[in-house]
Length: 564
Ligand code: AMP
Image 1: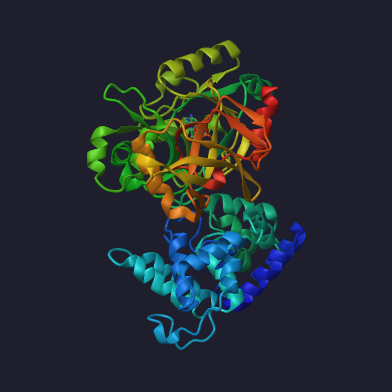
Image 2: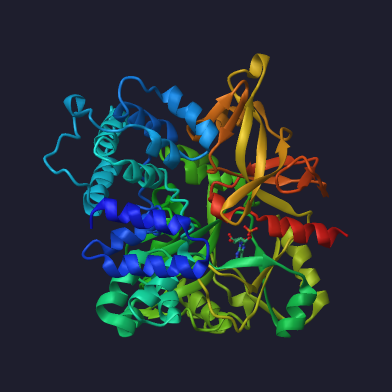
């Protein structure tokens, strides 16, 4: 498929407003795709790789503007592009209005013999770009991108620039792809949904629906080495849990980072909540699993940083380990981590997703080193490294467990329906989290200000936003609770995402999530969300969360109504 045809269809989709119209346009596009179907699906979602693959293009906005400026000719600078972007607010619109191309004489890369860009050519070129590493790689990336922009029509540039920055803005989310796949290849939505849950590969699922229909979709199973989305929790009370389920599965809630363990019985891979491969960052977890698990399995759990005496440390400590790519051994000495496995998705060649939690937990205990099938009923038998699951129908007993959790240095309790299936990616009512302390919010950083005097070269006063559909709306600014050292780290983290600057104020593309505490939430006309956090306090970077996982305006609303 020519990229021009893809871009033309994106334009129609972008202009459509009703969900049904979007689904039918996407379905037509999928139906028209040939061997590039998988790529078309990923491109629609603003991806070059499947969701479970943590390879990134590693292209910041600046690099993209650089390539655009070069393709636009000598009279256009990066600053011009940034100024234009400040007016338009969308790189696609800016790219479309530039007079790209005609720079063949200067091109190191763009002077191929092909005249039309195809979807496949763009995919392979962007993959080449992703694989470019080492000295001078940033320059090479600009060259490669320049080569593409230089050959792009206005409309192609609009969608290519957005694709490169992973934000298509055409109103097509994962739900639309799911529905369009069902429609294009005449298969039930439920079958598509299930296949997506276990594979996390929208391209593969569309391709399978096309070639092998429902039976092909049913054959898609969990695979060791292909992470799935973690099952998520909602906030809730013990009363909710007892009323809904009678008997409640109670576990400690550990203050660490989610990790999905995949083992084929010998090798071990570890994935973060965002499905990034974090195997190299956690060698002691790898060692633990290699020693204890000797059959193929997929295990869900939390890694927690501990002190020399085994006391849990705040989750920031474990995230430091996730971030650290080098000198693991050195950091390992400073921050030791421990696995608390709480679920088992797959064991001995069999998916356990539809098995009730109490039985999955019993399997987990068996898989992690000891033959204790009754562990769910007899928590004292729970092996090391496995989180205990208590079954209780007594509010007082649950309260007692909560106190024990907190005095052992953990965050509180998780309340789970003992009969529930494991639903990847689903924030359902089957897992409830109960935090004894005040609520916190996970907000996306969308702006900041350069400091003054001694702090002139670091960012401070960060603008916080919550999700509202596909957009982010502001809810406050945070400047307290941040040490000088943290300010420097935060500046390094955020600087690549700066979109534009005016005076000391900067706009930042949604990329980084802060956990913030606050005293209360008030209605306020000052911020886009209509609410303001009172006395917000920085608690840490949630580097395990992407902006799509941040809290929503709807959650803020429900917190406000809870307060009254
Ligand atoms: P939150 O990050 O506040 O949405 O809380 C949910 C997170 O708590 C999960 O994603 C896990 O990382 C973590 N967690 C800690 N202990 C448990 C547990 N026993 N069961 C499930 N999740 C847990």
